[in-house]
Image (tube, rainbow, N blue to C red; front, side):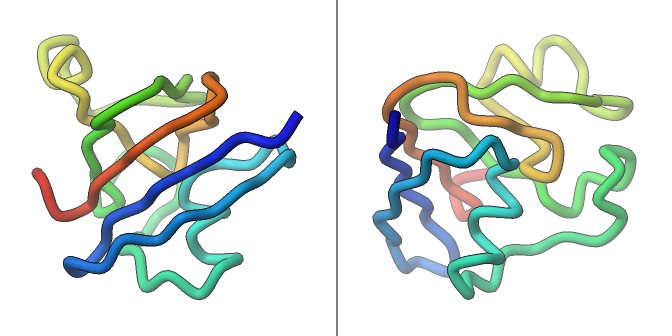
Length: 93
């Protein structure tokens, strides 16, 4: 089943669809979105973004506190889409 994804990055909003089991960062990079990233291991927080709507599941999180996660902050290199629709912002940190 295809999932709809809206990504805001550098004040540009992208509307995407995917049925792949990939991370938000992988989806962004596949679609030539200039999303920030570095280690891709969940330890540097360069790929930090905020989930506005929907939900993700992080494969690995070694840096964010429980409170930050509750506020919607995620590491996009570790975040797999777990709802049918998601909105995520690299700008709203």
